[in-house]
Image (cartoon, rainbow, N blue to C red):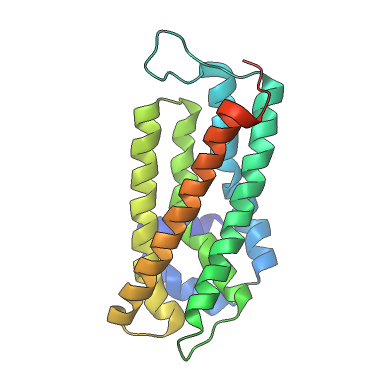
Length: 197
């Protein structure tokens, strides 16, 4: 697992070829990659929210009780796992137009590896400053887009021009899924959950 993380960050061209050659199952990828890396932003946010707290520009810092933060952490962990599967399904549906026709399993594996920079960007939630989290989220999203643009042409066996179109569409849907997750966070924080501060 760690070698794919390092490879995707240091030499993504070579790593995509290596990942494609493995023919890994979605179950194995979840067990060895996503379950661990999806916990990075969740655990970081749990620690940051219960110890340091969020400073939204007011004079007071907002911290959550351990029980409230744990409830939110479980919900968001499951949401992240579901979002990876959803993006795999999106890639699978878009891939049906092309001759390679990767199966759903390979599309989920691809989506799981593409999300790696977003998982790593979640480390900044240990010290939850709003501007820092936004900056790290943007950097993670940009590198995720880069991995998507590099990986899609080889994954679907299409030329780079056609890959650009598929990558752009997939990235747009991925950003929409991310915005839905953020909206759920805001709703739970503000209205839906009975959080204890």
